[in-house]
Length: 139
Image (cartoon, rainbow, N blue to C red; front, top):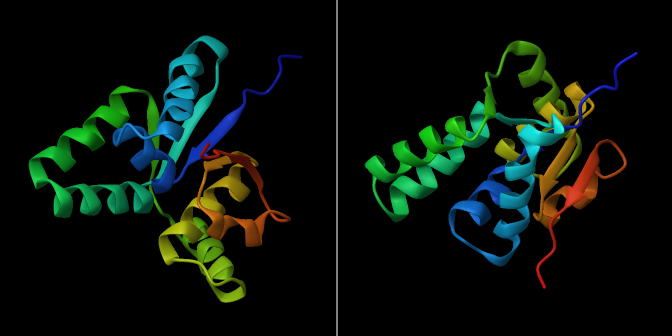
């Protein structure tokens, strides 16, 4: 029986580190680069992609933000729409934890897919018992 592929959910923190050429962004770049060879699935909630978009649009331009999201798709990151099941699960995280609503979508997507959440955002420490987290650490 074939082994189930490893699945990562990228949150906006990880993607912004990657796009901003931050130190931890290199870890993200390495995971993205090896994903295809290793059969790793990379996903991101459309809500978190929207968060990345608005941050880049505000800091740079809407054109640059559009290009960044296009680039994420070209890198093989699957943007997952927020259906009711995912939205309900994100809402449940929000009820129980002091997290941003967008971060709740990343946690919900990881839980729904039994995936590892790739992040360095300490806000996720409060859900470590509910989802698996692959921590990116600053030096």
